[in-house]
Image (cartoon, rainbow, N blue to C red; front, side):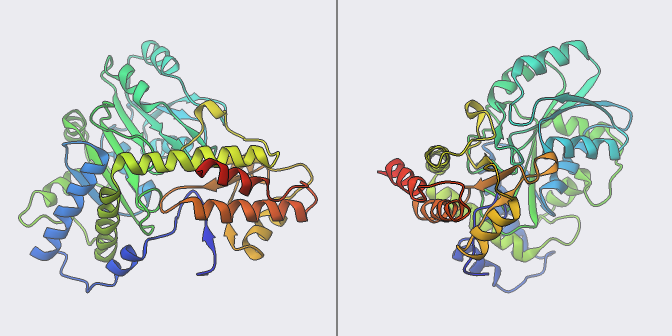
Length: 380
C-alpha cells in the first residue's frame, strides 16, 4: 500500500511528521496535558477557519460535524434550506430529515454552482427558513460554491448560514469571519492532510443563541455538552476523544500555519489550474463548468469506450495511482482527481503519466505524454 499514490478527494497522503505525532504516548484525556494539547489544537483550528470564535474537535468524520451543525441549531418542525448539487448537499438534507426538520431543496444541476441570486429569491419567498446549508466544495462533482458572495446575501436575512468546508478548508479561500458564516464545519482527511476520523466545528454568537433555543435531540453530538466541557480548566471533550488523532490534527495544523494559509491556497489553485490544462491536453472533457471548478478536485468525463473498472484499475494496479470514481448517477461516467493536501508538481506528473499511459493502452488516446508535458509547462 505504501507504493500507492492517493490522488483522491480524501483521504489524502499524510505527512510523516503527522504520522510520527500519532505515535506519542496516549495521555489521560481528563488531565492537564491533554487539556493543553486540546487548547492549542482548537486555537490553531480557529486560525485556519479565520475566526475569533472558539472551535471544537469531534471524534468522527466530516459527516459528524455536518450533523452537529444541523441538529443543534434547527429544531424539529422548523424549516431549513438545503442547496443540493451533489452527494454532500444531499447528505445535509438527509441529515435534516432524520432529525424531523422540514427541508426545502434548492436544486442545481450537478456540475454547476448555486448563485447568490437563487438563494436570495428563495429566502425572499420563504420567510420561515431558519437556516441554509451550503457545501463549499462538492467533491462529487468538482464544483466550488461562491460562499463569499452568498455570505453578502445572507447578511440581509436572519437565517443561519451553515457551510461545509470539509474538502476546502486549507485548500481554498475560507474566511469564516469575513464571509459571515454562522456555523462552519470541516474534516481532517482532506486539505488539512491528517488521517481520517476527526472533524471540527466553529459557531458565532448568533449560532450559539440558536443552540440555546433548541431542545437537545442528539447525545454524542450535543454542542451544549461540548461547550460545557470545553469551558472547564483544563478543557475537555464531553466524551472520550481520539487522543492520537488530536496529536495528528495538532501537527497537521502546525504544518498548515508554517506554510501559510495564503501560500497553501495558492498552491492548491495552481495544482487545480495545471490539472485542468492537463486534462484538456489529453483530449478529455471536464465534467464541471470550468467557471466554478474546484480548487481541490477535478472531475473528468470518462472517455467513450472506456470502463471505470479497467481505467481506474489500471492506474492503480499497474501505475500505482489511486483515482476516485463517480457517485450516484455519475458512477462509471466520470473519474475524479483529488489534488489536495500534500500535493506538488511531482504528484501531478506521476498522476498524469499514469492517466496518459492507461488511456493509450486502452486505445482511447494516441499521445500518452501530453498531460505530463502540460503539467511541466504549468509549473515552469
